[in-house]
Length: 324
Ligand SMILES: [Zn+2]
Image (cartoon, rainbow, N blue to C red; front, side):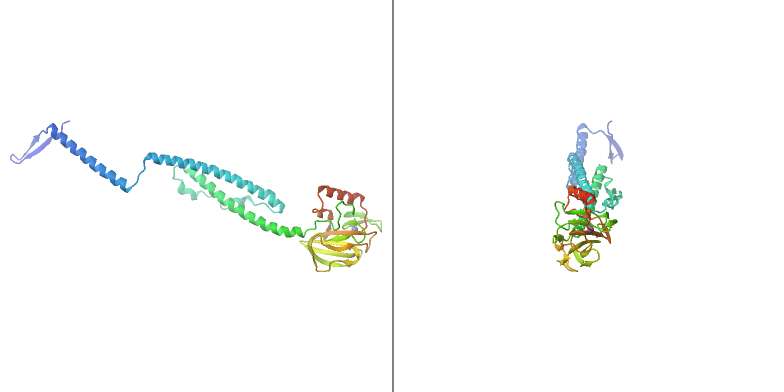
């Protein structure tokens, strides 16, 4: 459609209609186009100077790289969690079993974790699921690592304590008896050698020549080294942790330790003899736990392997001769 132009005529005081020719019209259009270009160019320049805007393609490229990296990160976190789970299982099923203690509870392992509201600020991101999941995994790993480190600290402390306990636990035979030939009679009800009646035998007898060295079976303090009715010359060692050991029918006053003296496992404390109520040279040995005598056969584990244990059990139960 043709544009209509009017020009004011001062003479006639009217508006006269004018018909611009093609050149004039072209110039008008050109002027407008030029204005547009200048204005647009200036705007773009200002925008470009003020805000650096990389191309959309660059942004998309970087975004996909980040996304790929997030996926790798997420996978590696999964692998790290698997390694940690393996460590946790070893902690619960091996270390804590050896040290005879309770495994770390599931509650303690997952404590302080949970509540998704702290990931809210991540939720409005594109790929928010992946970002939140990866962040959650990282948090969980950090938390569980912290629990695991604490657990190992506790285990180190306990094993140091147990080391002391194990040194004070009766664990060897009181006389040298590798081939078990000296095992005479075991713990429990036996026929009394003198009165010929069934009688409770509180310890284990080792047949041996007079003057055979007798050894402390664990670290401890000599509680008494004196004559006791029936037992003859007798040494009692207090090992702490509720354990005591008793060595009876020793050689007359040939004690190598005195009351209150500290002894260590394997230290010679006396020579065997035949004192007190005894039918022949032998050592009577008792292990007393919290005041009650127990079967000493369970306290030779540093001397005996499984076969040795069975063999000693057989000798003590079936062929043993009681000397009292
Ligand atoms: Zn005995």
